[in-house]
Amino acid sequence: MKREFLTTQDGSVTIHLPDWNEQYHSIHGAINEAKHVFLKHGLEFFITSEENIAHSIAILEIGFGTGLNAFLTSLFAEENGRSINYTGVEAYPVETSEIQQLNYSELLNTPVATFTQLHDGPWEVTNVISEKFTLTKRKQFFSEIKDKEAFHIIYFDAFGARVQPELWTEAIFRAMYEALLPKGVLVTYSAKGSVRRAMQAVGFTVERLPGPPGKREMLRAIKVA
Ligand SMILES: C[S@@+](CC[C@H](N)C(=O)[O-])C[C@H]1O[C@@H](n2cnc3c(N)ncnc32)[C@H](O)[C@@H]1O
Image 1 (cartoon, rainbow, N blue to C red):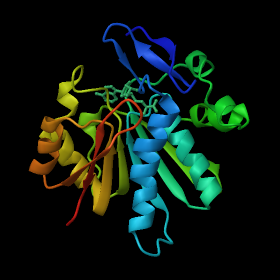
Image 2 (image 1 turned 90 degrees about the vertical axis):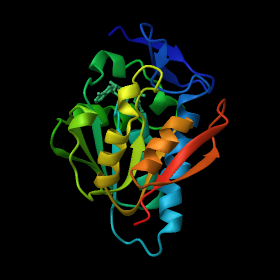
Image 3 (image 1 turned 180 degrees about the horizontal axis):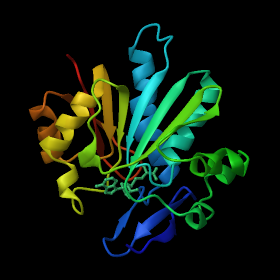
Image 4 (image 1 turned 30 degrees about the vertical axis):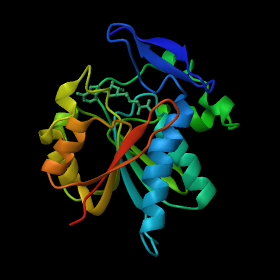
């Protein structure tokens, strides 16, 4: 599918799919959205709600895409001295030439290599990115995910239900529920009622939270059991 580039309202670049009129991130700000939905309401929430976490945090990302969520999480790990093992699932990896168009390291005042190293390493193996951050990229369809009680947090960042409704079903959320450890947390930018009901149907406790810029609400689902 054809991929183009678009500058979002916070100055960060994202990928636009003209065939679907869909973006990899919010047009109101790719970096702002990622920080709000995944870092603040996912990772930071998990850390503050768990007492005494001395262990590494395991994160699964649904849709590795440009690597922006992984990049922000790797910077968080370094800045906060937290060990994070990050797994990104992606069926259609972006090309090296496309990575070069993304301006995340410039906007976040980090050397370009801190971002590109996330893309340079091989797939299907654990890449040690820094003392605090490992990255495993899995080239896989979401429907093939079979992990059991393996992750503390899931960043659910599939394209919207308007274009890929098959990725927002009970079957997918059941697999997500099974992949999470008890007390695990799933966050997503979506706030659709049908998505919330699908999450609840498989056992999640779901909260609506204020959304990122340009969006009223988002969802956080917890595996309470
Ligand atoms: C919203 S984008 C993810 C954005 C990404 N989190 C980022 O920070 O750039 C959704 C991603 O899901 C991938 N994708 C779409 N359908 C998929 C499927 N069935 N299985 C696996 N990956 C899929 C797309 O290629 C795209 O990279």
